[in-house]
Image 1 (cartoon, rainbow, N blue to C red):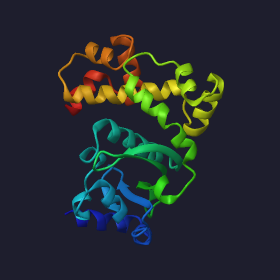
Image 2: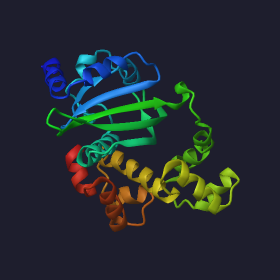
Image 3: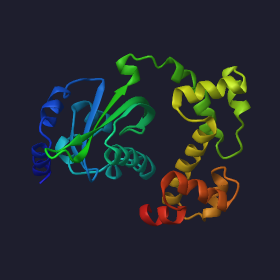
Length: 245
């Protein structure tokens, strides 16, 4: 059945099978092809190794929600939908991706829409490059590692931009400019993202109340937490818990 799904997609999108074969053995490029429903259609050996999946056939037909934590899967799905809805690629995204052993690596991500013979969007092709293995200029990102470690260790309390800037030996304005240039977001937005990720995990793994989770993840109160959570995930904490717990 999985192989049939793949064959049907390859017929709809001429040429993609050949492209997949071309990228099959590149060690520093991770390839994935998904259909409109977000189902895995094809991938290369490097991605299988990273995800710690033994058989390629078992991956076909699955979605990110079968492989990743709900918050991470939801983020990938939002990116995919954006590409398919606009028909425009996402180029040079830089973000951390967690693999099969729970290790996180920084990747350069490119996502392109795939069109069928009628010119209708049929899915996406995504390529990730491991900065370390590809030998790309990751030094500026690695310099920020102490900042990310600090945020991960202290997101439950208020974190000031001046604290983060001091870690880098920069002024507040210098730090904010460098952070936005590297990650296309502000330090405050990144901290909020980390808090929402932590909240997602607590919502699906505990029975704590929404107010308790808001307090544990550094939000001012239930109302503020719910507002920020919905703005990032598209649903309220209660709906998210009901959907994924």
